[in-house]
Image (cartoon, rainbow, N blue to C red; front, side):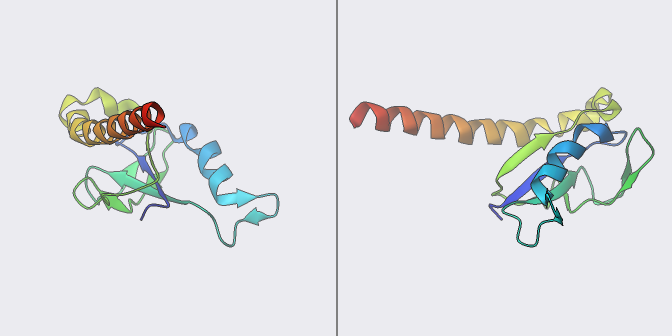
Length: 116
C-alpha cells in the first residue's frame, strides 16, 4: 500500500531510533489517530520475531520476500545487526531498487522543469 511507511529492522536493532517518528505518524495531541494518513509497518529479513538492543521482541509485518512493491517510505533503522555482513548485504538490492526509483522521479522532475 502506498500509505505504508516501512521500517527495515535487523536483529539487535536500535529501538530508540524509530520511536519518535513512528509516534508522530501514528498519534496526534489526543492519542492514537483514528484515521492516520500513513501506517507504520516493520520489515525484517524473515518473518521470525527479532529483538532490539534494548531487549524488546518485535514481530514483523513483512519479510524481505513479502514486503510490498509500493510504499510511502523506507526507513533503515540502525543497530548491531548491520555488523553481520551476510544479513546487511541482503538489504542492498532493496535500497538499490529504491534509489533507482528516486533517481527516475528526480530525472522526470528535471525534464518537466526544462519543458515547462
